[in-house]
Length: 207
Image (cartoon, rainbow, N blue to C red; front, side):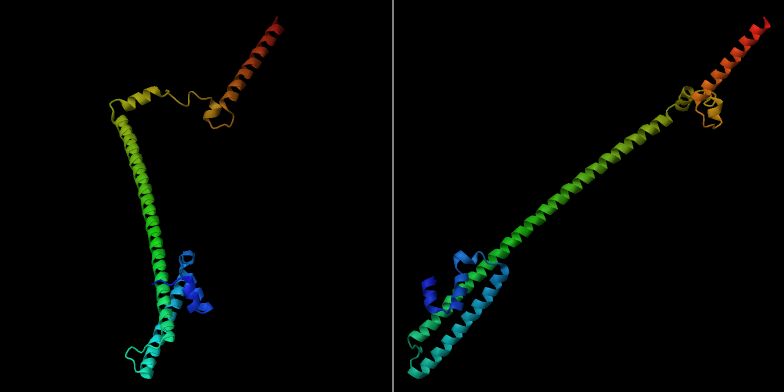
């Protein structure tokens, strides 16, 4: 039978009773794994202690009373009851520890599955992006190659180019002078204007 609090209180000392209370349904769920391991060790020690004590008491009673079973009443029964009480507590602690480990294993397995799915999705996106880039690069290379190999491609390119790139630029710009082409043109216009003005002045004097 399962012992209740009242029965445990009558059988146990304060320290023993605290071990029993920790195994009850309203307290065992709050225990950490470390606390469960400690209570398992303690309850196993108490179970073995009272079971061994019961065997010794029974043997002593058999010798004293001559009874085959060695029963001597209340003392033996109390010791046997305490052995059973802590055996029950031990079973509850061990079952709780197994449930806790099972929950942790399920959580870890779920986290590993989620990480594997995320890695698979990331790899798929990278593979898709790489394939698209390769296709685009191949298309560009193919278009460039086709344009180069097309008949008259070079002639058409040359036809569209100006006859002489240097001839279209001002001399100052062609020779590497830092003066821009616009400034050079403006300078030429100013020189021409001065020459025209000088010519008009000379003509007036000649009259």
